[in-house]
Length: 352
Ligand SMILES: [Zn+2]
Ligand SMILES: [Zn+2]
Ligand SMILES: [Zn+2]
Image (tube, rainbow, N blue to C red; front, side, top):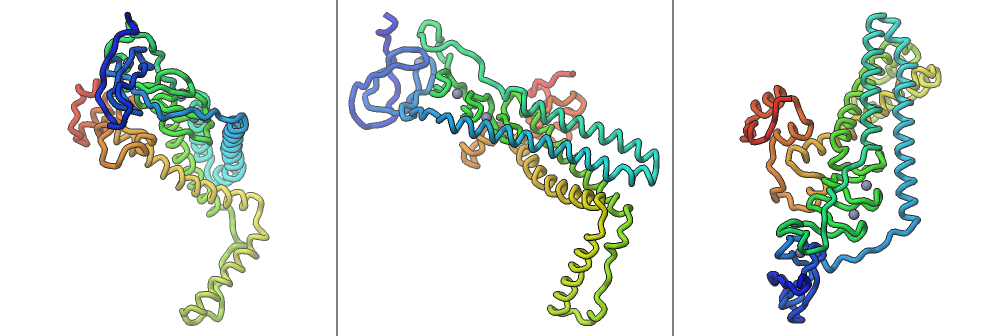
């Protein structure tokens, strides 16, 4: 009797053949169309079927390559962070302690806090599951209630239902809830399970890089650069294009000659300052992008899928508050002061 139940769905495509019949993957009911429709939604369970998708199995080389790439990037990033911490301590602390012992102790504490914050959030982002979709019963009519699979699609890779806002990642070989993107540097997807750790990692990186740049520049100013002192070109009397070229040439010659006499500590300080400054710029752009998507109530994948003007969620600081699970007093300060049109009650913010 169950198999004989038929639900008619709206026609989406006017091409033949007529009386086309198929089975809904969500509830198992037969559906009849008066014309062929490649994508349709079941009138009973609400599941969406796309008959145009076909699974191309990934080659073993593809999986191996992605896996190796991710592990390599994790290793490189971890080594780089340990190098910055170790080399920074070696190059900066003798200079800091030589100026003030108390300053040295304060900076030791700050370094320990920032190092632990950065490495712990990195490890959490990498090894905490990005978030798998909830397990739901499907495929049999009496057990799947009306609207029970509303807007669900079918993942042909995992062979199970995929709820809205879920995407399949071919690198992680799983469906990820609220997937933002797959990040090779953490070797993991960024999704509902680890998005907060990932953003926290970016914040810690920006603050730590700024701190390293500040300390290295301070140390560069106090290390004693007598060989690098600039000697102005003697015969540069007129400011014109030839004079400017001579100026630049002599300046570079002085720097190169002076660099030959630099100590290892000087080289490390210059390298750390330049590397951390470049990293800080790149990570700041990424962090700004992430915070903008969170503010807009969307993920990076939603941004790619929908047009600019499409409303995915309501914009506002309430999204930031919810994302970071901010304490009540801070939520009130943030949402109240920025007047986003959202009351705290509507956000279900409870006193923590
Ligand atoms: Zn159905
Ligand atoms: Zn999947
Ligand atoms: Zn992934």
